[in-house]
Amino acid sequence: MKLSCYRCGHSLEALTLPLSRRDECPECHVDMHVCRMCVYYDPDVPKACTEDDALEVNEKARANFCDYFKPSDTAFTPGEMEAELAARVQLDSLFGDGGAEPESPSGDAALSAAEDLFRK
Image (tube, rainbow, N blue to C red; front, side, top):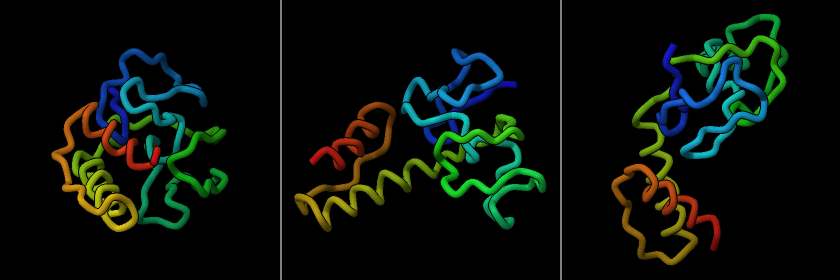
């Protein structure tokens, strides 16, 4: 199974399976033992989980202790990070310097620009 980060799509080959609760994406540093990275994650069902016996987790992108966690090799959605970056730029233009234009999200530069928005 070839895993990639659910957020940025970076390969997770450097991580060993099973993913631990403390594992992070080597590229964007988000937690990997999260609902969003699981095969049972489905935002279209109640509690966003198709595993009936799993306890409800409120924050789907934060590390959790779910015993049913199984990493998904299809968790990455390419347009999702672009939408996130565009939303952050729009927020900055509303509440920040007001002159920011959306950048083309590409790798480290786009991630750094998005993180800079929250360091001000």
